[in-house]
Length: 242
Ligand code: ZN
Image (cartoon, rainbow, N blue to C red):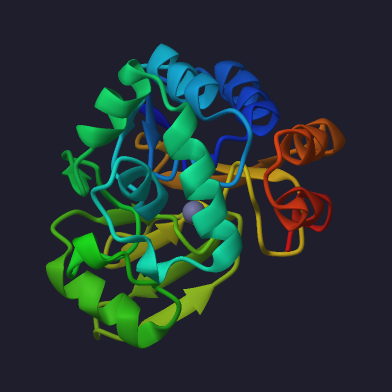
């Protein structure tokens, strides 16, 4: 199986189309999204449609749930809250139904998906360090867990002596005696200093996960955000990837 896995689209259609095009050239069998389809960007309905057209199974992100009143906005900074209010006013009934139906966790025989963490996933906490990784490893029932939420691609590894360490490699060869939490980074709003859209390919035959990046029309996505009356900062940060 070859899985195409991506996260944090954030209503950035230009970035999502670039990722979908790259994945289409990679003999992907199934697509998965780790949440935050909407929020920040100017094309929430179009991005929901695109994810649906890929038949991508998605889990819920905090922005998805906040956009359909399933998660409190008190945890959002002012720009993010503005974007949620903007998004709420524009979501069509099909997009609303889709986002309302998203579940917090998905797992199959090969991997688990959660937007933030496996412990208390409804709180959407950030998995940033060894300690928070440990909590998720305790609950992990598959070899690999894919997460998003921080918008920074990163790999947490637990070895057979229960030691947890962090790697930044973009090619991860899965070892027999280790388990993994892999942050897929963000399609629509990367924050690791690289503005290119981030996504993952998991090849179960090769036992390999690759974190890949693709360029897209950042300026067009930025202009749409500003023209839509969304906070200018949300457009500007697409250019720097921060
Ligand atoms: Zn996000």
